[in-house]
Image (cartoon, rainbow, N blue to C red; front, side):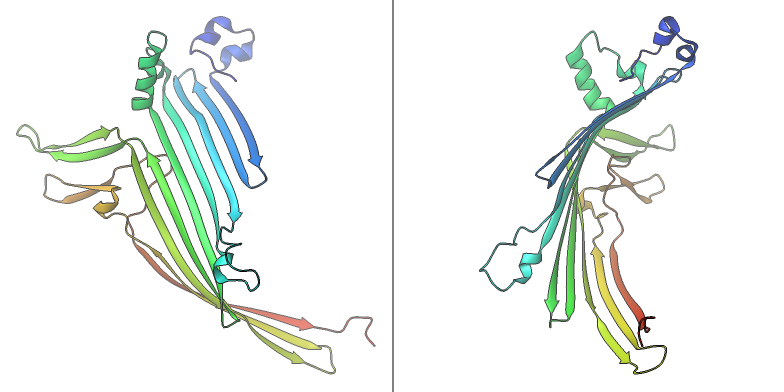
Length: 289
């Protein structure tokens, strides 16, 4: 740990390097796992510049990861494998408490009234965010030779404040944009679904004599479709709208600058295809007679 007051080295420096130093950093990390399936990482970090008085800190930052597992693997009678038994999913959670401000503002009132200082820090200076990501996929065999893969990814974002904007008309000026910070818990979601069909087609030609004994061709066609909704629709609660002084509707992101981003306002419908060709040639080895 390496945290000091802005004037500490001015009066307590023991070396020339201490006297000239103005940037201080600290970090601490902890990692553990549970049965090799669930992994937890905790980090705390701090960066401070005593000249600009700027302080940034993550206190703490957490990541929780669950490896891919198959919740329906043992569902159903023993014997023939069912399609739903191959359904796999994983989980990742990130959480962060982040501060970025000058020390004179951050620590004002710290010693006088700690409880009041803590409430003000949480409300006005800290950025807090939690994100969850759950990918789910299942592969089904069709007619023994075609693989049908379906994927669904759910993202969830938790924030504790957002902005709201409105255009204010007045007689003295041409009007102005008013931005208010709303301290309220918000939960945002976005998701994406995709489906793919693929198979393999084999071809083989053998030669009895000559420098080439066989040629094998593997053709792998894939066709897929991906869909993501438009999260700019007001029903999702991510984007806001106001009308400016010229009567033009403006759109803004209520959670701009948040720690883990926000859902996109662009709808996506993507058709993809891919053709992969693999050509293999077999030649006689030096030991062949």
